[in-house]
Each structure stands twice: as C-alpha cells, then as structure tokens.
Picture (cartoon, helix red, strand yellow):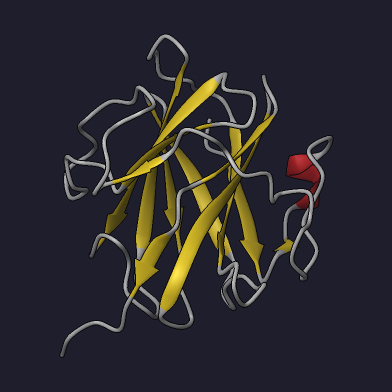
Length: 176
C-alpha cells in the first residue's frame, strides 16, 4: 500500500495521516523537532544499523544514518541527484527504515520536512513521501531554498509512532 504525506514550511499538509504524532508549526521548535541521538554523517562512522544499498540511482553509501528518538528504528538517508542535495528543486531522498535488529519496516506513514535550524524554517515546496516496499520510503520535492546547514525531520505513524531528525548536512548552490 502506498502512503503519501506532504509537508512544507513546517506546516502539515496531510494532518490526518499523522494523527497522534503531533504537528509542526511554521516556527522553530514544533513537536517534530526531537533530535535523534547517535546519528552520523557520511564523513563520520556508522552508528545505526541500516542497509548499504538502495534502489538504482541512489548512492550505495548513505549521506547519514541515525536512530529514531525511541531508538526502536534506524534510518539511512540517501539523496539524488547530489549528496547532499543542492539548493533548489529536483532533489529526492531515500529513507531506508529498519528496526533495531536491522529488519526492514514496512507499512509506515512517513512525513519528512527539510528544516534549516539556524533560520527556523522549512522549504517553500511541500514534500511527499511514498513507500516503495522493503523498508524504503522516497521523499520527493526536498527543494532546499538556500545554502547552509539543513536537516531532515521525520515523523512516523502507523503500526508504530516515532520521530527522527537527521544529522545536519550542508546544502550548496550547484556548480554550473
């Protein structure tokens, strides 16, 4: 079953899909802002167990791996066409979600919000998240609006509820 949830500018677009998980306001803080501990970036060592390969097109090595707030789930984050993503439209992310034993977790409703902590805002374009099967969820329309440090805030509902925030990643303007 395919679940699609959208977020933009910190405002929940499909609120009914996240019932019981809170929502984020357009200002900093919001209930989606719980930072997951134990995350690493591609430059650091791996800390959370997550598969190393994804669907064709996404890089084999994740941009980062991190645990959910409850530590019950692990997330591997990959981005296309660049890793980390560049400023502007056209970027996607792949989330590979596994349980604490490394098993893929399916049937979740996942919402993702690109967030720029220093500016206290998300992106101007709502994201959508589609389940692909095998614990893989693809986030479309990342669209970071400016260069700088960003993170991806994730809210999970369905058979289980949890939150996660990726380690920060630096978005730059693509070379022309």
